[in-house]
Length: 296
Image (cartoon, rainbow, N blue to C red):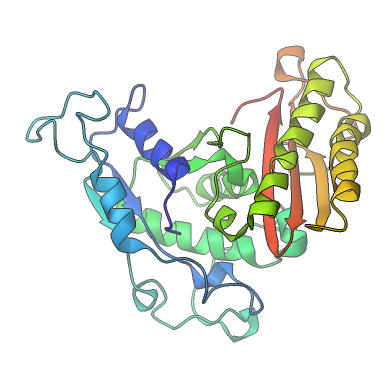
């Protein structure tokens, strides 16, 4: 989507470094209209392509202490190509943010798209699945790397690639965080100073729930409650200032995204659980997650 930050750049570093050590790295940058509803911020979403390209050029083999492949120098960028298509190139039939007005081919992953983020943004993952399919077809990638911060998106894309027999391996990179724990996101720029000061509570809440799980708690309700208590306390404390609202806290099956009753780690024969949450702070919506007892 562009507006690159160090979280995005960490995925490029991951692609270039061992154990992946990708010989050719392609980055896609595209603000996808199909991921926005008519009332959402498509027009105001940051578009910073010149800056994004400069950031990508700054990642050289020398800066990452990597040996360049034949034909490249230490000062060559590790990113070999950027796909930055126009809207008409990806949507030749045109694209409206109103699903009822859309025409052409679209991809939907049924069963993973309408819970969690899908309850608030019901057509979001239809847009994600469609554009990722197009970009994977364009890039013909052997490996595609996605960030864990958008964990449901990772689940949707992995299922889509499997079901549609797309020959691309999906790899998930860990969430990059600010020093105070806030997950890096382009939307963090929308936060006022007062709102930014409150925002790390989302990670603190999830960390408290993860601690509960790692101390031996296997009741999903109790794990979720540990996060809700932290968020509810902060919402009450800041009610007259920033206006923190808790949209959901969920502990779900990592494969089906169905709500769990109990959760056990893979090391004990369970499947683990995806702990995810969304909050509103002022006019900005933030999401985050923790992986309990499993890895993507």
